[in-house]
View (cartoon, helix red, strand yellow):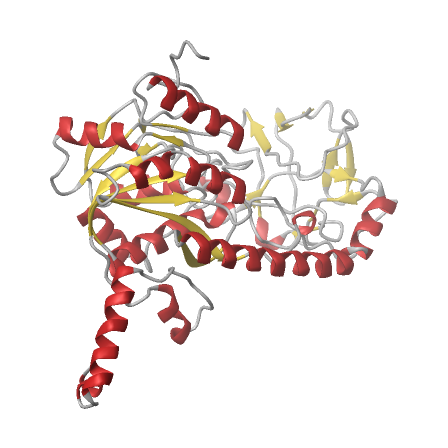
Length: 461
């Protein structure tokens, strides 16, 4: 700015006019690249007006239809509202990068990890674990090897067949589907008879990458068996089915990758056009997958702190019904204007899943700290400041809702429980939010809301 002041007066006038226009029409917030220079693009150097509430809507890159439904329903109502339009800023939170691995070639649909099948072992039985030559084995009086689908029992009178130092018994043949996840459990009434082996000293035969072993939480086996490291107490034999189809899938990977890269370029172009048209998207420097949603949220918190002035932040998802007028009415009723508060519908003592979409392998406890349902919650500005300032150090877990609960356990905010932030897909009079709707369902709910004032009780239904 000092350099501009030494120019001729017309230039100064032009610079001032340009700055005024930028303040009137802020540019869209975008993110690109991960380098230091590119980070400047993440947070545009402009300051908007002060807002009572900033609304962050988590959205996947491909959810164009859901975003457009929001723009034509509750967001349109907000923009046209004489009182609320100047008090609320709404932004969709989208990862700046699409996953470069085609969905068919990922370990699971929730991450961006390549399913690393290299040279599958076909037409033969495969021992899952191989013990080293110096490994001894023992057999207790009553040992049980159990798996989620079948059980094998071992005892001295019925030992089974020994193959390479492990004892096996035949079980019912069962073909596990693609992406199957299960837990293997070894049990024994004789705690000293269940001989375990250090997993790091056991060769895992993954059949060329068709399966992987993940150790479960510490403490599942008695400490004396674990020797401070992961351990195994048995094994199993398996075969790979439909080998021809698997080989065909591997050989077609290069073609799928080319097509996928083309689709990503088209998606980038559509998102760029969408952002330019509506100016309501914040692109955060994250690969847009379900597992990265907590990182998306932290990046958005940082964006809000560095680019806007506000009192409260409301987080929701793009498949949720939201009634912002009801939210403001509740804020006034509850007098929610103090520091360090968290307003939502909280799940307590929620069990940690070790498999499936909500698989959690990093959090050791069997239950999560209290966390708010993801359909909607409100936090005070000072909490957003804390999250933003610590965003580079906070560990992310499998979901943004449970991650938020773990992060908040560190600072102990004042929790305001409110069941009108619905956790499940139901309709209740006076609800603040409700999740998991299709674009058509969201449109129908809002039409009933405008027609009768209540999407749940409307004679026109």
